[in-house]
Every structure is written in structure tokens, then in C-alpha cells.
Amino acid sequence: MRYSTDSPDCIVVGGGPAGMMCAGTAAAHGARVTLVEKNPILGKKLRITGKGRCNVTNKCDAATFERNVRPDPRFLRGAYADFDSDAVMGFFEGLGVPLKVERGNRVFPVSDKASDIAQALESFMLRQGVKVHRGAVSRLMLQDGSVRGVQLEDGALYSSKVVVATGGLSYPGTGSTGDGYGFARQAGHTVVEPRASLVPLCVEQKDLCAAMQGLSLRNVRLKLLRDGRELFSDFGEMLFTHFGLSGPTVLTLSAYALPGDTVSIDLKPALDPQTLYKRLCSDFEKYKNKNFANSLNDLLPNRLISVIISMSGISEYKKVNSLTRAERSALAQILKDMRFTVSSARPVSEAIVTAGGVSLKEVSAADMQSRLVRGLYFIGEVLDLDANTGGFNLQIAFSTAHRAAEKMFARQRA
Image (cartoon, rainbow, N blue to C red; front, side):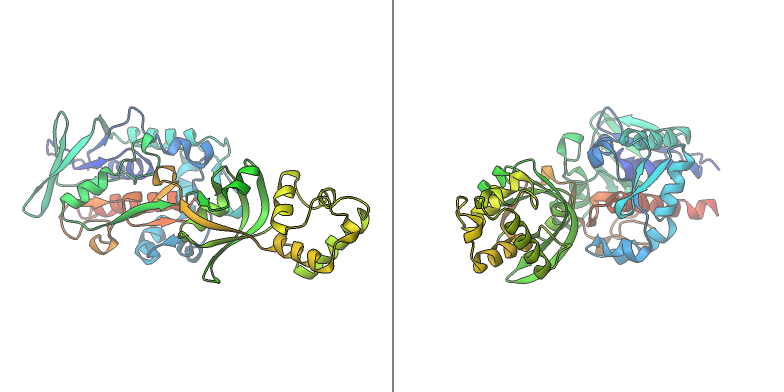
């Protein structure tokens, strides 16, 4: 059905993945929708996600999804049940974008082009009749506990339903400049302090990291320790940078890290300590007449060797056949427990997503509507929700967007 009022039935603020999904889904049910986007192109941030490949979702069950979401995955239980990873995959494949599942159940377009996902969303939305207004929203228009529309730089748009889908603070060059937090505060909402999530880490031993800058390691295990207690562990890839640590495992770990915490790297997780020690002894026997610096090439990447030698305290010129048992044991320990001390996270502008946001206590999980202002909705990254790497953050965007659109016009459709 079509509604007869002159104003749109719904205004969506923000043309990212959540905004486009919500606008298109609402319009598909007959609502007249206007999407407001301040960027010249839609899905600007979406087009660079996953290093331009776009990890669309994670093909997993609900329990796995919840384990990867913070701070309250129960808030998404209904939204995910209605529009889970299988539904997201079916949606994009139905739009003509073939998908593939890679390691860790990460889902990507077969083309490895994030632009294919962004263009599919945009085309879907426009086919449903969504109107796109290019411009910035300066504030919400509120009256008597309800939303009445949005004030623009060049006028106003009126509607009794406004969806805030403005994202967080990460990658501000794409337009994610925290506008939604201001709209939420204007409406009386509590905003949990936004902070970086999924971000590289600076460490105190940056000189050692700088010596390995650009070195990528696969199949390593990282642990985050605080006062000797393990807080988090992950397995996969990491990268050394001039300031510290990066890569998928570090980004996930960063969500839990504080200055002063220890990152422990197990360079040989497939070998238990005893087996690793035997492997070292075998290599040392092979190179017994060489200097210590020339005995580790079979075990480690060349750029890692000098750092390991420095951390071991063993002279690089010492003959292998003169290494003591204690020195060999200490070296094996470093390979299983290479430690760096966190000094800080990189700025939120470099984060993949923003933690914090509109308090979930003030938003209804049933339809993403504000509990404080009628007709006002919050979806996607602007909410106090974030998740580990692997496609979970985009799934949050799609599930919350779909939930809002479906529930927004349920009564009218009925």
C-alpha cells in the first residue's frame, strides 16, 4: 500500500549499510522513504571495508554470533533471529552478488569487491522508490515527546518516523564524524563514551616492532594478559608496524586491551614446549659450528631473527655448540611467549568500528525505537554495540536495520 501524506513516511539519516538496508526494506513494504546522506556517494565507508573486499557477514549460528558481540548480545537476539547470516547471504545473492565463505566462516563477494555490495544495496533501495537527499542534517525536530522530522542546512524534512543510521567515529574521512551521538543527546539519550574498537595497538617496545615493520605472521596465537591473568586469546594473522602491533588477531584483541596490559605471542602454537625444545636442539645440531645468528633460519622469518636474538640476551656471535641448556630453554620460552606491553590504542579515527554509542537501555530491542522519543529509531554502529572481526559488525548493521524497517510499518501493513 502507499500512504497519502505529502511528507515521507520515514526519513533515514545516513547512507551506509544500515541506512540503505533499512530504507530499501521499508520502501519494499510500501512506505515512502527519504534517505539523507551528506556524502556525494552512498556507502562510502562500506566500499573500503575489509581492505576493499567487504566481509559481508559470518556464516554462523546464533550462539556463535552472540559470543562475538559486545556489550549485550541479548539485545540482538530477536533481530538476528529475524535476519541472520543466512538471510543476509540470501539477500545479496538474490540481488545478483555471488558470495563465498572463507576461513573462519567469513563471507565475501566472489569478486572480492566491496563496491559490488555497496552498489547492490544502492540499486535495491532505488528500485523500491527511495528518494535520496544530498545534504547534512543539523538537528532533529522534536515536539511533545515525538519526532517531527529533521532540520537540514537548506531547509527541513517532515516525518513522524526518523531513523538515525549515521555510524560512529571510525574513518571520519568517510563521513563517520559522530553526528548521530549529537542527535541522540538532543533527544535526551545517554551516549556511552565512544572509543576505538578493532584498532591497532601501540606498544612500549616500539623499537623492536619497527625493526620488523611490515612483517606479517600467520598461524600464531595471541593472548592478552593483565596482572598475569589471561583475558583473551585468538589464533590467526598479525602484523608488526612502526608503532606496534596490527592485523586481524590484534584488532580483535584490542577491544579488551588497556595500557599496561601484556600481549603474549606464541610463534609456534602447533608445538608444545617440549617438542619445540627438541626441534631447537635438532636445528642446533645441524648448525653446531655456526654463530647463533645463523642457526634460526629454518625456524623463523629472517626479519624476526634479530629481534628474537635481542630478546634472548644471547650474543649473535656465540657458537651454537657452546649454547647452554639454560640458554636453549630460555630461547624456547621466548618463542612460545614473546611479550609486548600495550602503551595505548591507535586513535579512534583509525579503528574499524566504534565501541560505545547510544545506550541500549534506552532503545527497544523489539523495533530499535527510542524509549524516550516516539518515532525515533537508532540502528547500526551508532548504538552501543560492536563485535569482533569476521563480518559480525556488518551483520549487526543489517539485522538492526531490517528489524527497524519490518517493525516500523507492521501495524499499517496489517
